[in-house]
Image 1: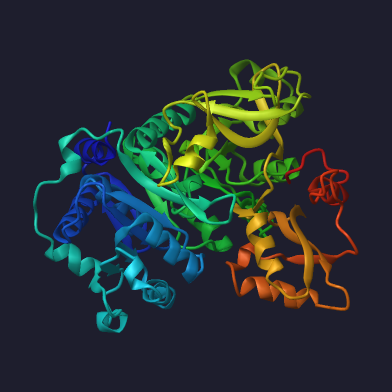
Image 2: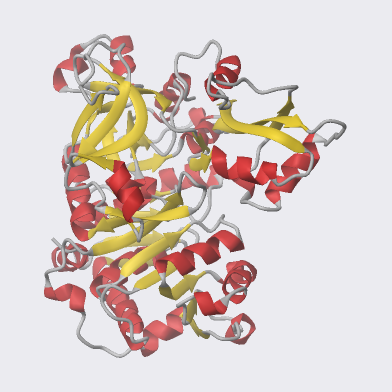
Length: 534
């Protein structure tokens, strides 16, 4: 099934139903589909061909939803980009993806200008569509064609939409960029089959219907939220968009728009449940609050359940898997357990998602015992797993073994089939739902003239789940301040990747082969925690 079919069917079955609420904009499904098709015409007017890439860097907005479906209509590959990235990182993604059109919010003009002006010869980018109508001339960037979003839609010429003709279900639909182990972002390919199958799976698991109202609160460039674009549309539900995370506004929107479910990263949930007065009001429309994108502490799960008075579902997944791999939904017989025993399952990583096969294997590739003790790596396969990385054949090959995708996450599994992640095989840090790779930061630290050795680890943090900590050895006779090192990193990489704290030591622990022994470093900070995620 092709992604374009989803919106076509929704417009046919629920033409007059409210589909999108975004500030003052309220669109029916007929209007939503019409606007998405017009945006597809804009792409075709730019002489894009099937398989070409279109990028979007934008806060949550109805425009983001339209771009997801317009790209499918025109047979193009959409590349959503994190607007928090630096200009250098944005430039890399535009170059690596080969995007020919970029949709950008006007407020990001300075960042976009820096990103596309540094080395134009390396970019295929030709057109920038700005989501504004005011003073378009001030947004012109030399060497690129600029247009205003609404004006472009109004003047687009109708023509054949290749995505509507069927076929191509196994072709790439999206490129989501995630940090690689070397620190360079890599594009995760998701096909139409990946996306649609995942949407169908969530409909089954969460029993989605046209009565559901989804709150797009987490960013739409991230799959923790983006998957709902397709699942909610498939059942004719309503999309309510919040442009940025503002605690009072989010809580008020949940009540006034009668949101029935949303998926938020734990840092967002932590802020919401600690907002003054949040627990003093009722949220009768909510039936599910899901968390994903980062590990979550059981104590926070309790607060979420007590504050919102609805069912809580912990989710685990990856960009490479569309994303869900597990959900902590209770099996029917577990619902008859005492409340505290039910909570133990609710606060676990969860049992396998319906679209995939999952196993936890030891270093020999054999499945671990389902005793909730033996630790192994989670491997998965199924129709929602990526076919690979964009132009990265070696990394694609390394990610799979005998058809199974190796997640790199270590977990235990119990007799009910519920897994619980206890550590990460690689030195990845998840801070506030964002993936941070230690090697990238270490490389920056080694650029500083005062640093002899450096190791970067994740340490427990009540707000962000994990915080980035650098442990460094200075060169003899050289002294550098903690703040200077942190600012040094912030000048070279995105701020959220920079260390929040730095510890200075005389030497770093080493393995027998002379490698820095990070496990010993981590043990000090994680003492007293049952899991190596927070």
